[in-house]
Image (tube, rainbow, N blue to C red; front, side, top):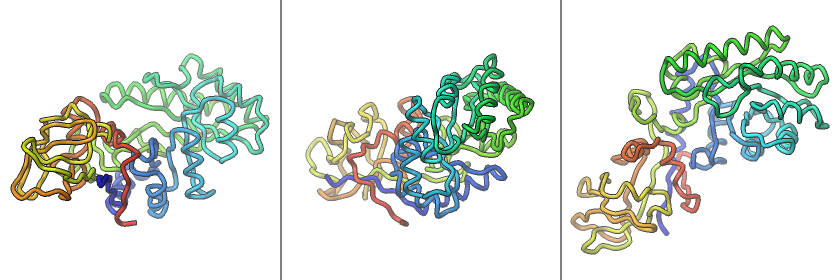
Length: 345
């Protein structure tokens, strides 16, 4: 197979600079979940570190540990999918910042013999219900956390949460709950070094939500929100391109060597155009392992076509909006089996 996913690390660096400017004076926590949004964890993390990123949001302990191997001991690496005692032990051993949103995890920490105190960021549920400690249980969780601090089992590093970014009114309500939870932590003698609430959209649009850290993933990779402002308005640009090769030409069109099994949703058949040497052509059919594009004069096997992303007619979010999803879901579908190639490395 000749198809590949091309990642422009210089474009990525430009996005990082834009994100940093947009969220200042808060620090940018680069989210690198799901193999850095399918862009390739190691290459992305190395370039981000070289560009001055010092906080990484790694989602789970395994990813956080992988980031630690790439960038060494000085990075701060935040993880928030924690399965239990084994994850707590591994996360503490790798000196990860642990996003704890379950009282049971605090009780697990009380039973573990850790070589160094665990770095804990306590999560308040502000209404999104992904996880997080309910407001009515918050004081009890603070009491347990205070005991763990006194025993030297944890360092209380932060208070954090997720917000829906569905409406300003919902987010305002969530922020009020968040600020009350932080005030309660301070009243209990737990003064957080870091507060973080906003992700990409709120981090760009609403300064009062930025706090100390802003967790920005999608915008860093040039993936705009569905139904929101465009890339140019945000000042970001797509980083990656899905590039396919013409393998055959017949009456059905020019056949490319990617299909739904490589991450291109079959529901997009007949719904978008790609650029060719002769101008735009419609994607007629997406099968499991190949895609047929309306033919053009002088099309030949070996021609390369950019299906979506950087320098394509459509971005990941353009395609997402056609099938009622979000841009990062399109990016995350790109199969790991497709080679990642890098420019600007």
